[in-house]
Length: 264
Image (tube, rainbow, N blue to C red; front, side, top):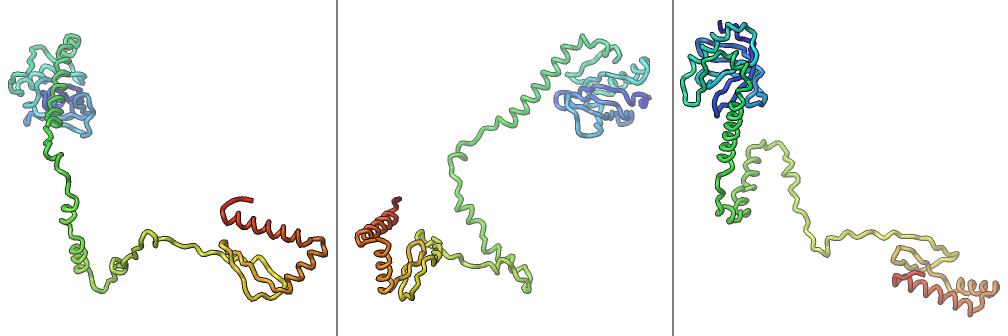
């Protein structure tokens, strides 16, 4: 007789602790007094497990939502569950068949509201038990001692133990890289850039000395004979000594302005 209820959809109220289960009957065990459900939702939340088995000792109330058998067979199933379930204070007993309870959904509005209130009450008690634990203020006042905590871990002893357990013929990367890094002062930890040497000026005579500017430009020296020849060529093209002095003065001013950071 129990196999005829397989496939029916029922709603099982298991009290405030377990909640309300709703699903399709997959097995009814008359000997062990258990009901197995598939496609189960608990408190309107889909369960991840494929099948849930409920004992008749935990069932407070049972409602038939959708049946796969005839009406006259439902009275037998209802009486079987009611006979097996122990009487409790919160148990709701009905003398009418389950099919009549299903047809009186309008009159069950108060019961549904009571179930919602019971679920909210259970959730509130759960939250209060989890989050209402008082926080000890003394723990917050004491600062955490990082140095004491680090002293509990001896790095050198741990590495020595690791090296002792390792094979001697293996070359460890840690031992190969044990190099003490060089420490510099704030004024020593500076990498100097190499000044590029630029040889852009060439002269038609041999020179014995040369000068290098801050930017790396090489300025060669000239002989006295080359200097006299340059002056003679200047006079031939009309550059008199007065004009040459003016040119030298202008060049000196441009050099000074450049060294001082100005523009010309």
